[in-house]
Length: 153
Ligand code: IDP
Image (tube, rainbow, N blue to C red; front, side, top):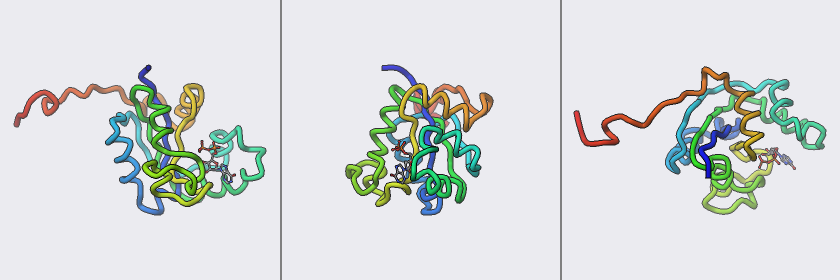
């Protein structure tokens, strides 16, 4: 058990389908803490960096076309075992096979357009957070407003 940070993306299909709020809400409702958040266009160069393990695969050209097609929302999320917690919530890669109750299982019918990305290991999380966020864009803050302690004005 360790507090981890992970890189999550709402992919272009999630933005185009107006599911940004729904997907963010699922991660927030689970208890993950958002420590970085932005919308950006993934360039072909950024796509090749992010998906370096897939660049030589036959599906890569279509994956690059998809991920660069329109903006994504990048989320840095923190929590105990955040990497595996988020991966479990996402479900397996192919939306048609992903279990009901998972984000992909509930909302996607595609292997490529599967709505979300989540880092799959601590090493990947560090590498991907560095790709998408500068150090200044990752925020440290406490959950210490009085609303958590007692009702107040
Ligand atoms: P993951 O996102 O579930 O970790 P990976 O195997 O790392 O899955 O693949 C990265 C992304 O590449 C997938 O989320 C999906 O968008 C796309 N992808 C993976 N395999 C295929 C495929 O066989 N055809 C088309 N797209 C694929």
